[in-house]
Length: 134
Image (cartoon, rainbow, N blue to C red):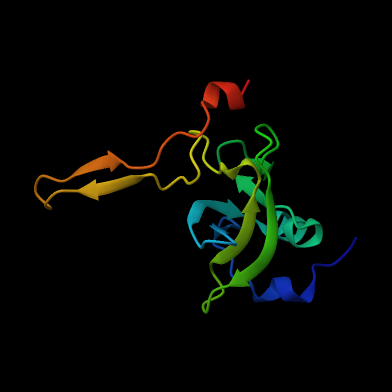
């Protein structure tokens, strides 16, 4: 049995063994998505240079792009000051990170005043999800 790498001991996982992971475009800084990682996902990401997350709904490792082809090549991994959030600076294959076919999962903006605000879709669909997920 192999032991965990030393650097992994600096990572603070929650009670479920998870840590939030923010994927950021390495070129323009746009936040693409937020997901979760466990120790196995983080270790595999560091070893392969490809983003691997923990899917809470599927309860298994999720290799970004395994179905869509929209993989994330990791340029850099960063750990925040408290050790409880991971930042991945990535190069997004196909320019699509969101399952809705958009560049980013953060495509809705709150518009209006606090009492009458609504979420407005402000980023276009780049590819129909029906064509991505067959």
